[in-house]
Image (cartoon, one colour):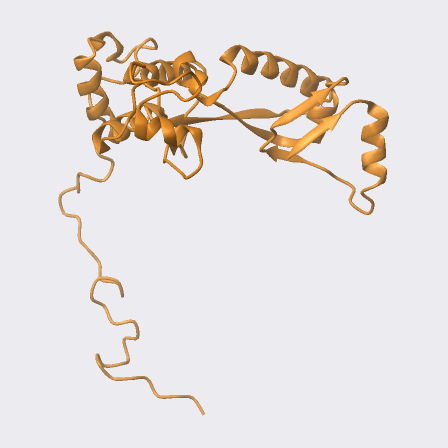
Length: 247
């Protein structure tokens, strides 16, 4: 959605022209929002606003033609300020991407540290996938940056193509998932960043796996039969016999 609201009167006109709709809410996909009156934005949000800074590091951000995280910080300060003035408790939900062309493993590590420092735990994450007619796809297949002059002597840029590297980049986005900790420990040690492994606040991941929740069955525990593990669905019906039709 592209929204350009230049005045409070224009916003009032928007409301008037949308009758009988009495409520307009934005949840995400806001690409451009020019505000002479910034208080309008929090009024339109219904509690959560999804935005896509995509990354925290400049190397991949320049390949996406995205601004730095300073823009996100300014927007968040404005959003928090005017949400508070409007008397509304609202939150920004940032979206990030893994394995984008131009991204190094160190970039994903720094992104994971930013996520933990800001207490974000991403459940649904996006991994880059090349699609037709996209500049990033040209980067992915050529290893060159078409946003600059390209020649036979142009420097190659990092591209994440192997399945193991793509999984690792995604694991950094989901640093809080215990299933990813063994792989992250191995990668951090290889990167010489064993200092990020431990149980303190400054560490990215713990040095041990958690105990399995359902791995231990107390002694004397008896299993019980259900229709899912051997018990017939209808006790009165013999196995292999179709039930009688109702007339």
